[in-house]
Length: 243
Image 1 (cartoon, rainbow, N blue to C red):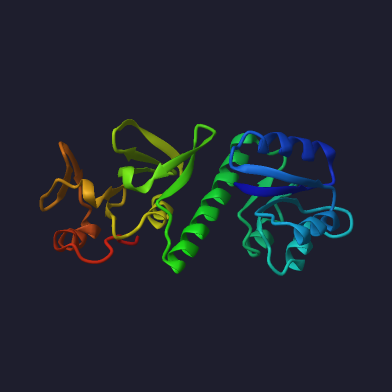
Image 2: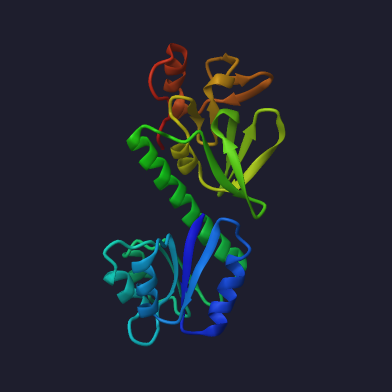
């Protein structure tokens, strides 16, 4: 769960964002702050994963606040003006929202933050050699736990992916790209065979020159991924293939 705070000098903006945060199960609101100085005190005292930050506020601006933090959490900037977007992204913010913020746009930005958060956890786990055997995705306004061993195959659909699970007929659909999904999965157990497909190696039942089979399901192998078939047959190494 992402611990977050809101920083804005307008009560209406604070109320709206608090309502939006309440719709997402992976967000926990820790505090509402009317200026950057209040927010700085919160960040110094407790763990904050994500800040929803206005730019133009009395005293210290949102951009100045970002620059003042030695170890900054993820930040989603929210402003009535689009002209600060370039400066914002140079500070590695997660997203930049322009007021009035629509719920669907807010959710998209938060999903991106949640994705970054999970990728960071996954990276740290790989560094320590203790990669989790599960992960969570946001689907239908819920956090759905996915056991790695149950993932049969994954289909990419533009900004969304479908996760097909063992013994579960309906796939889980979530807002995520294939490259980031690939990063969440252990390379020794999954293989990218196409720009739109990742499959669990243990579920493969047959391989042809240009196809991989999971029982009766036939999935094509993309031209850029054909060399992974030899690695699967030999059973060596990590099989994920980068873009």
